[in-house]
Image 1 (cartoon, rainbow, N blue to C red):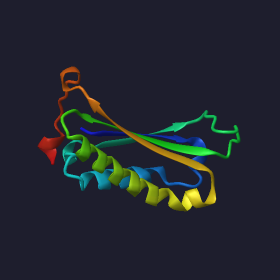
Image 2: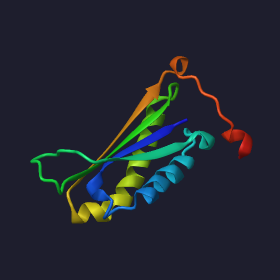
Image 3: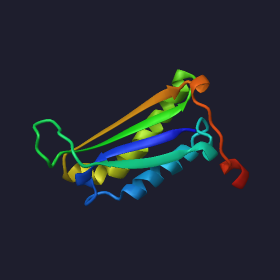
Length: 125
């Protein structure tokens, strides 16, 4: 683990390569010690319906949720969140210069006692 869940407004698909955005997040996370590489999962979900600010449909959004097992120091999580956010901000900067776009990120802990896990990815790396 961690899980990176990207929600985005459907009006961004003509201006932004969502697969490339996922790869920016994955590559950035893989370079941060607090995120074990075999556990990184990045996925994106398009929102077909949204309403922002004054209701103008040209407005778009990207919201990134990072879920990871509890136990990291607050300053470690803050630095990791800032590094991922900055990488995404730099990636979407050309789009933000051309159109209305809200970018947000939130990191939250998962209680390990309430989140059993298993998998074979590490066996195949």
